[in-house]
Amino acid sequence: MIQVQGLSKSFGKVKAVQEVSFSAPDGEITGLLGPNGAGKSTTLRMLYTLLKPENGTAKVDGFDVTESPVEVQKRIGVLADARGLYPRLTSRENIRYYGRLHGLEGELLEKQINSLLVLLDMQSIADRKTEGFSTGERLKVAIARALVHNPKNVLLDEPTNGLDVMSTRAMRQFVLRLREEGKCVLFTSHIMQEVAALCNQIVIISHGKVSAHGTPDDLRKQTGKESLEDAFVAAIGSEEGLE
Amino acid sequence: MKKIFIIFQKEMLDNLRDYRSWMTGFFWALFGPLLIGGMILMLGNTFRESAEEPLYLPVLGAEHAPNLIQFLEQQDVIIQPSPADPQAAVIAGDINVALIIPENYGEDFSAGETANVQLVFDSTRQSASVDIDRAEDAIRSYSSYIGILRLSLRGVSPEVIRVIQIEEVDTATPQSQALIFLSMLPYFIIFAIFNGASPVITDATAGERERGSLEPLLINPLPRGWVVIGKLLSAIPFAIITLLITLGGFAAVFQILPIEDLLGVQIGFDIGALTAVFLVSLPIVFLACALQTLIASYVKTTKEAGTYLPFVGLIPALPGIALAFLPVKPELWTMLIPTFGQQILINQFLRAEPISGMNIFISASVTILVSLIITFIAVKLYEGERIITGK
Image 1 (cartoon, rainbow over the protein chains, first blue to last red):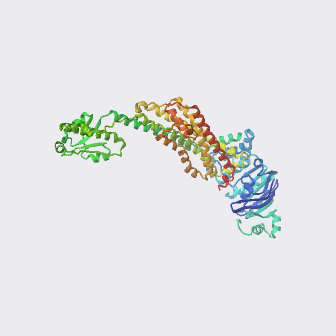
Image 2: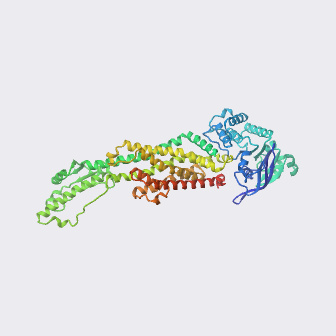
Image 3: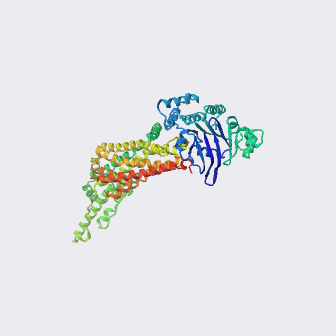
């Protein structure tokens, strides 16, 4: 459960995020949709405690991101914008490192790693050094290490970026599966069709502000447009981000 | 706190697998011992040759001055036939010095006028300076010997032209020249420590950021200070191994080379002194790791780190270089400067001088304190947003 209230952040004179509010309940997929540079990643970075909000609050399962960051960190699994791996470590070692940093160890940790390797269909690359992995393979390792501690809240920043068609499909299946497990999934995308296909509710962000918010049906009603695509364009006021 | 160890363990594994980096680092650790060994070898040979061996002097036109040649031979100079073009031979480096006696030497000499001879040499060639000086001295003494004879023949006392007699009292010994090189030894020790730590630290900090793995790492539930400390600690074993290789290299050089024959001086580099130098250097290991962690965290890329870190190792070495030319007494204030105090202490160990325990304690404490402050600043840097945004 993620609750965001009046969140703002500037870098120098640039107001990256202004008064953003929304909530993402458990067992649902919430999509942050907006063109590149709209403030999606900055919002997410405040949620996963790397940036401090200037104004407003953000809470994960009731814990405030500024007041108790470590409690928040324990409850979130994050696929960040930067998703670098350690090229001299194998996939398994990369995942194990994060598991240990979350306080897992021994058999419990190894079992959890193995089940993620199966779930993400990556047994064949489990014990290879990650140097030279394809984008899709790297993404799998990054997701596995983000979920190694079985977090209740999952934050994914542009998870399908750079993937081919098959990998994108697999990724979408995986996100749906997380919802079935009752997790709170928050993900950002600039691709309207993807958000429309997956999300229970959509938060459209442009120029750092929430310009529309609701279920796909709500959005069509709010903007008075028949198709979601038109609704999106009406909400952000331009055709940026339609692919 | 256990998570510091997890970070440490991962960085060790990761960096051990980067074997090309640390193999190169360990190889460079032998640079100092090899350089010093080479210099001692050359210096020792120069002493021996110049002191013991006769001077070989190629002479062109020896037949014009048989008396001079005879005198020189009495002075232990071995006269050799000169190449046809002595200047070219000196330029080419075939000979160090050559004497040219012109045809009209005999005429001038007999007439009692100043007779000219030419001494051909290259004054910039250090290795030739002993030969040049000896040849010049020998010819001068012949000149003054004849001059005195001529004055005596005319009934004038030779004292008339000898207004002042300089007696040279030179306290320098071959040993003190050799010790100049020994003063550079602490410099190489400190440089080795910095060099051993820098690849590991660069990879763990600037490299982590460049790979894009820093941001996900910092989302894990642990204080950022522990991340910094774990990374800093992981560089320490590498720095210590580099230090040991350098010290071992110096020990080997001093064991293998017949130092006493070469320099006529003993160097106190037995196991005891080696251990003492190692222990005195340990606080510098901490300082090197802390300082480089701070700098490599501040820069944006590994390339940028690569441009700064070698100079960082050079800065503490500067006083050491100065030390080679301006000996400083081990006073209290020198112990308050990290790395400078240790350099003086290391020098004292090598010369087997008596060492104040107080000085060791103060120098170690100050260095550790400064390193702790630097570590604290690095932690603060990691706690800020700049580490993420780079702004």
